[in-house]
Length: 359
Ligand code: KG4
Ligand code: ZN
Image (spheres, protein in one colour):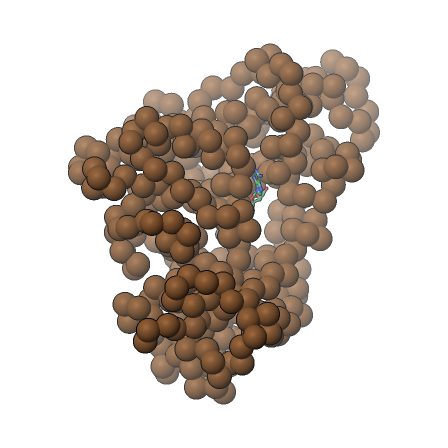
């Protein structure tokens, strides 16, 4: 159809996100019930709590998005919902609700892969043609992939331990950044970015580049986390820091840690670009890398990738910040892309959720 309208529903982790998007890429309406805002996120996601909040928010999230769009469910051409990967109970809330809506209103149902949606939504904002390179960095995932088509992804590398956002959150928590009011209502990753801007001497802390001798595109952040916490503990002892106090060098340590995270991510992205060059996987006239996921909001990290990209002749794109983090817009947009190509359109309302789903 010339201009389709899709309702997208995202509940794979701890945010309940919905949006109504049309095939021109306009966001007609959206809603987000974020658990990060309640700042229960620093310590990681609690699956039981997340499930409960999705259940109490899902109905309002859907009706808010429709109301903001000025649409009735009758005006919607299809409902797209995240079915994989993610937390089992969380995924079930969205997919059950989507299935129920589709059944009573007789609408086609489109299952969406959360990571594919993160990658494809860049096409809503920028001129990005297949194939392109994607780097997804968030609190739950870390991967590099070649996107050949809407439903054709080739994984090039992934995190072998903690995700970068998870490590940023843990380090922020351990540094007690939340005790400062200006960092108390934001994610750990964002707190580290802001704290790092106040650094005056980061060279006193040095970290080795993770996996430096491996020629693949995998990631490892747990070593960086451990050595940062070790340096923090050394300084705490040295300054005899007690209770809720922060170490005097906290800004410098944040900056040095953020630099190490950025260098590692840029180094692996560079490897992926070299691999794509070697096997001619990317059109030399159309070298594009898309960066998304919550950690992509970090301007310092983004600029490091942009720098490597420009050296390799790549244009580096990222969606707006609120579309880098988990949201309903990317799910609705992926629904539009699948509708266009008539991929995965379910009219029998069958859906299965898959907590573990490779690209
Ligand atoms: O994509 P997202 O909302 O959820 C998933 O994990 O899937 O990402 C959340 C993560 C958190 O770990 C948060 O600390 C990180 O993204 N994050 C940031 C920034 N803003 C959010 N990390 C670094 N710098 C930021 N500005
Ligand atoms: Zn995500």
